[in-house]
Image: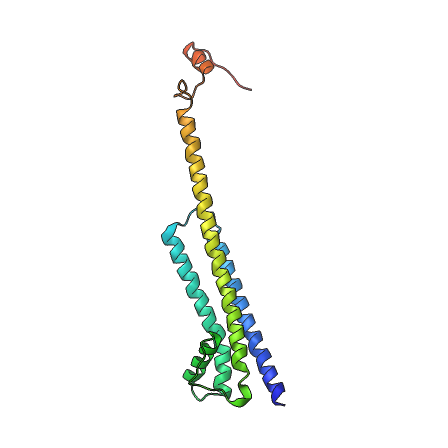
Length: 185
């Protein structure tokens, strides 16, 4: 009967963790899509840093939220105080481990499972942040290429050939100096 209780507790906790993490990541992705891809061509160093700090802070808050179901379970079944339950859960989730606290024998298998889930969720968050930073770098390099191309095109149009400083070719110069006008269909 103990195995049934352990298995059901693990399934519920892992499912809650996956739901919270998935919903939180989906919300962050929607926010990033709405704010990153609105035609802003170049963020610059400061705006990029602020964006990464904001997203990282939100990811940390998301992980703290995903730790709460585990801490609640530990509080109700294993520890007398919330401080101990949250501390143990955070230490297990982050794979640091809490050597000063020990779960009752019945629930000892929860600690490695929470650690495994925590590593996977942290990996998911790290890949999200990596994708955002990669997108920012790609956007800045594309914008730089476009600016260099636009500058080189505009400088070629202004300079032109030696006899074309006013933008007219030799034939147009002759026609304009003679008072003739050419119509194009």
